[in-house]
Image 1 (cartoon, one colour):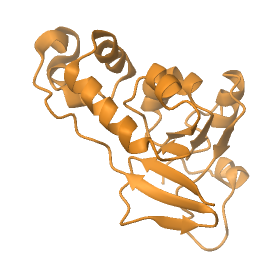
Image 2 (spheres, helix red, strand yellow):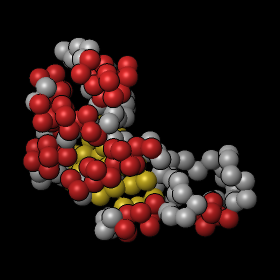
Image 3 (cartoon, rainbow, N blue to C red):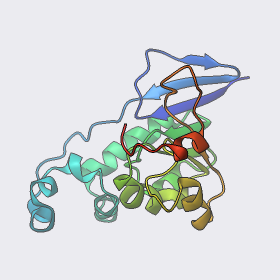
Image 4 (tube, rainbow, N blue to C red):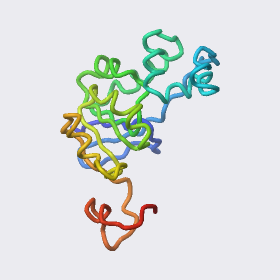
Length: 188
């Protein structure tokens, strides 16, 4: 028997089999029925008028969830139904599902949060939702000269986080976290 894995935010052509896992990419759904709303314009400018942009910030997701915005709830329900047959759900970046929905509606599934759109989203989208997830991964060892991602997760008392680099850009030498930290060039 294989374990079904959904990777939300990734498009794949068909199912990939990796060992005992069947992996499917689930593209981010679009919020059908959402119309411009000027309620958040005073504090957020034009971004506050576009509901799809609002799905990028945890505070707006919280407002949509608490107000039970019909277009938002419909998009969430659609995604939850798509995820129903999966055992493991990996959000390859920030989830637009409110963390209470993740905890309640995806209960029984292993849910993993990817920290891949950083450093900004770590603080506004990742950390506020982390309590609803079973595990997390991050693609960069650190965004701070004084604190690594590993240190951040320890300070959050979240032990199930691992470094998972997206790519190994060169064949030789193979880089590890210590090699990256010893670099003298600050940009690449």
